[in-house]
Image (tube, rainbow, N blue to C red; front, side, top):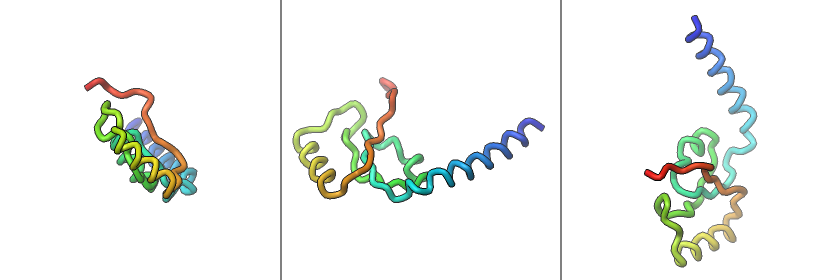
Length: 88
């Protein structure tokens, strides 16, 4: 059946992707906001800070000072941000 074949290929690809991304485990990243939980959990990334306190609300001066301190102390390797964010 097509469904069984799809599931089999999906599981094989998941294993392949996990092997390809093992080197990312424990890397420190910042996120634009907390919508990266599933990806971070799956890849075992360490999200050390969220830039926006709430989606669509820019960080305050106090937030920026905190983020600068986090960057200086923890040296994240990337900032994760979506290309598209729903208006809702």
